[in-house]
Structure formats: C-alpha cells, structure tokens
Length: 586
Image 1: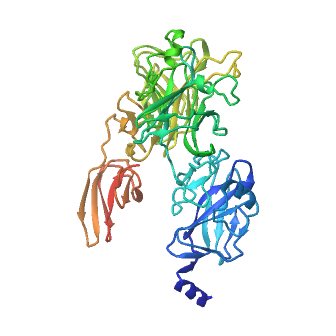
Image 2 (image 1 turned 30 degrees about the horizontal axis):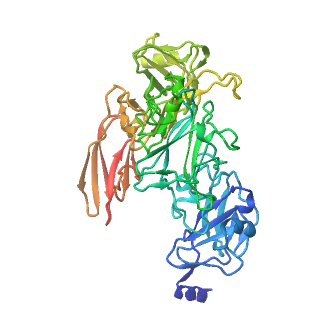
Image 3 (image 1 turned 135 degrees about the vertical axis):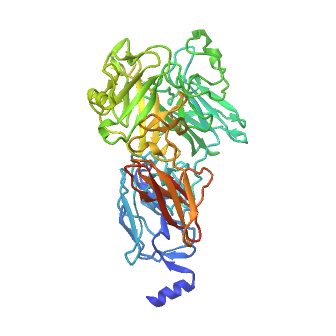
C-alpha cells in the first residue's frame, strides 16, 4: 500500500481525501420521474484523485468498483438510468461506469461519500423546503452548488440551476438575467387588464423571439413571444392580457389576484427547446389596479408600488372606454414603493423576557384608518410570519395614532411600561419574535370574492407592510438585548436597515462603542472601549472588508455584560496577517 501511494504521488495522482472531492450538482426531483436523477462530483484539488473503492453510504447505493480517476477540476456524473439520461442530455457527459441504485428523496436526505479506506469525503443534508431553492423540487431545475468548497449543508450555498433540467458534466451559467420581469399588474377591471412588463438592464439588444411567458413554473411554456420581438438596452416591453389570454389558446392564462400567483420568463434555443430560466417571481394577493414592481427599478425585489407604472396615464378609475389606450403602455421605470397607511414604528424582539416583546404600529395619514373591512367588519387586519395576531373587530386608529401589539396580556404590559388604561394595547400574540431576525408582516382584508369566481367566499389578505429585520449588519446590532429596541427613523420605506435605529429604554439612540487600538506585547494588539451597562459585546474579525464591508464577519471573544458602565480591554494575537476587527453588541 505504501509503494502504491508513493507511485501515485510520483504520477501526480492521489487517493481521494476529504473535501478534495465534493458535490457540485444534484437532481433529486427531475421532471418526468426518477430515471433522470443524477449527482455530479467535482475534483477541487490540484492533482488527479483515485475514486476506486469509494462508495455512497447515505442517499444512493453506489460503489466505484471499476478503476476511476478524476482529473483536477473535472466533473463526473452518476445517474439513475443511463438510457433516460442520454435521451435528455446526450452522450457527451462524463458518466461513471454504472448507474446508481435506489432513489434520491424528493423531500431531502443526507448524502455521504466515503473513500476506499472509510474516510468521509463529503457529507451533507439537502432539503426541499425552508430556505432551500424551490425550483429544484420538481419544477425543471437541478440543485446547483454555488461553492463546492463551502458548507454543503447551508441552503444559501445552493441555487436552482439556470439551465432547464440542469447542466450535468459542466459548470452552470449561474444567475443570468439579460431581461427581468419588472412590473406585474394582476387585479384589473376595464380600462385596465392584466399585464407583464419586461425590462432590459443590459447594454445589448435582447432577442425574445420564441421565449415564453407563464404564470406557472410547473408549466413555463404557455405564451410564446412572437418572432421578431426585441428589447433594446435600457428598454421596456409590456405584454397584455389580450396577448396571453387569447380565446382558443390551450395555455391561455390570467393572474390569480385573490390567492397570489407567479410570473415566469424562460428562453429557448433555435429549435424551440426550453433553455434557460431567465426570471421567475411570485407575489401575493393584490388590490384592484395596484401593481407590483422591482424597487430599485430592474434590480430590487418585487414590492407593491405607490402608483401604477407601465408608462401609461390610465388608472383604475379612468373611463372603461380607455382600454385600447392602456394597451399602448410602452413600459417605464418603476416609482417608489407604497408605504402605509399603517406602518411598523417599533420592534422589540429581545427584551429581558419574551413576555414583553412588542411591536408598535403607526397611522401615518391625516385620516382615521379602520383595522377591519367596514362592509365585512368581522374581517380584520392581522400580523403574520414572526408572530400571529388578529385584531378584534371595531378597532380604528385616529390620524397619526399608534397601537401596540404585544406578547403578553395588555393589562400586564400597561403596568410594566406605565401606560394609561386608554393606551391602545392588544395581545397576546402567538409564537415569539426571533432574536436572530426574521420577517414580520401586516395584512389587511380585501372584499370577499363573489360568485361566479371560483374562489367565491375567499377573503384575500393584502400585504400592507413587511419588515425583514436582522440582528447583524447592516441592521442596528445594539437592538438585540435589553434595554434596546428597533425604532423607525422616518415614514419612508420600512424594509430597509438604514431606516431603523437602536434606541435605549430612555428613548435615546444608542451609539456603537468608540474603540481604541494600541500595540501590546509583540504579535498582539490591545482593544479598549467603554462598555455600556447591561450589554454583552462580541469581538468580530475578517480578513478583508470587500466591496460591501458589512457581511462575512466571524464572531470571536465574548465580553460579558457589566452591571455598571466600565472600560473593557481585550488583547488579541494578530500574527502575520492582522486583518480587521470590530466590536458589536449583537
């Protein structure tokens, strides 16, 4: 064995070692059944590696029984059925000597590959839910690893393949958006109709001939864009319901504004075969005449817009005779997101006791706002996601008034905070706010759907505002822990970290600590700062600031909280590459 190892090393070939071989692509829920499943391996090292004798002990049943060597940077695909695989991907893909037995679990499972000597080469667990890419779960994409040298069990290290059905044997092209779905109008009556706006953010004209638009990722080839359709650099193109809902078309569609829907754009090759997922986005229920659009224009997430865009002056309250005029809409940059009429003003997500978590809502208008549907008063506003709470019937907010929703009994909360009995406080809610950050959203009821609508009786709930708060940069890190809370700076767009500040129990903004650094003994530095009472701090490090300067910090030493303000001192070894340091109170 030692002579064999020496010989292999002399030839630039080494036995497989942990993380020398990794997984780069996984197709666990392919279209048309499990015969099209595959797993792709990649050699991350500088030498060829021997896989002979290696085997999967979890996930699939496969052993490299024949001599198998993987060259540096090379990929190798193990498939479920070689005939089915070749019918879809051709004969040019580097395949293992035989197919695997068993089946990859559509719901997720652990995958383990061990070497001939039993060493674990890689082991990870994928999933089909939660934060894992959804399109890979039976919707025409494979599961593609962003960095095979990174953490394989981290869903953020995986993406749905841009290539339709995946890209076995070669690196995927990754996210590719020469054109984006920029605005969607889904709830309409004349003079409006459903519409999709596309935008070209690039510097080259894009030919859309033969591409498809759809409202269903499971059936992306619904409306074929006519030949000769182009979008110039920085240009727009709007498609209307008259285009994709034509009588007689088997795949005609409109958007489902009561339940929410999705919009899909997929490209094709010269033969009409589906090629790349260009854009796919989902949205919730919407109000009549109100559109969703990317903010910032062309690049940001889909949000409810303050005003209909599309480059048309026609609105829902215009004359129904103006439908033809609406259909002339050329497209245009999106305006601002809608804010209000009620917004989150305060989020206290980690007090000394979870019982005293709360949020404060603010009516930003100069008029009363009913937190219920006046025509259907039992249908009330609600808070969802992080916590669940339904307002009782009859609650209204006067102009510029606030209301608190808390985790405990309202009377107990008033007593704790010294609030009068007249203060609007409701609770308790169910669940609790995450200390590490999450989404919290406010919804209002739309009128119930009426017959003959297929969802007659359904009450659509319209998103009023959502906040994805966090306990790390760029969000105010001092908001995590007694006695601080998150407080909104302005009534501008709420789902932006820059619009929030950490505020102390006294209502004063909390400044981050001023840190002093000096050399200590050789090879180390001394970090000194004034530690506020009752606050736990952490030292964090990183090698370089990078472009953004806010992500990628590694948490290190904890500085426990002190009962009184005190001067904290930390001695840090710096070695040959000191890097960057910061002190945070997460």
